[in-house]
Amino acid sequence: MKQFIIALFAVLSLCTSIYAQDFLINSTTTALNAAKNNISAQTLLIQNSNGNISLPFELNDAIEKGIIASIISTIVVFACPVFILFIIFFFRYKNRKARYHLAEQALAAGQPLPDNLIKEKKTTDQQTQGIRNTFTGIGIFIFLWALTGKFSIGAIGLLVMFMGVGQWIIGYKQQKKNSENK
Image: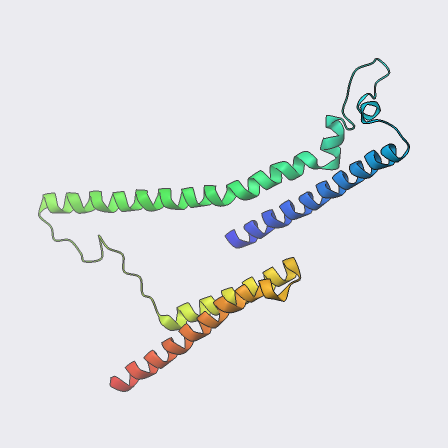
């Protein structure tokens, strides 16, 4: 679910940025056309009949054209991963602190501590990690190749994929060797 939301934010940011670029290109074209017709830049800035100086676009135009939306979406896209990491580390810290407090209470009561209470054991199976890295590399390859259109940049994902294939083979051989020894 997290990956789906991150992908949606990335698509939103990309689309609004492209829309904003299109708006800026159209604004630049208008300014260039005015320059071709020998209209000075000062004439472009003075739009009101009252003599007030104004920009070539109003704030309402910026809202309608999506410039503000693209800026906000870009900020959200870059702030969202930082916020998610903050939440993950906060709850990990809170959980660890609660376990230490529980261990402290158990020691005060004279009860023995289980081995896995303080230190978490993660089973790192080479084969599982290899499968995960293989498909992560394939995903990175497809994403970068589709995003840039260049195979050479997508090859970064192939590097991760082949590392995963290597881990997968090592895990398979270790599993086979362990089953023969038993």
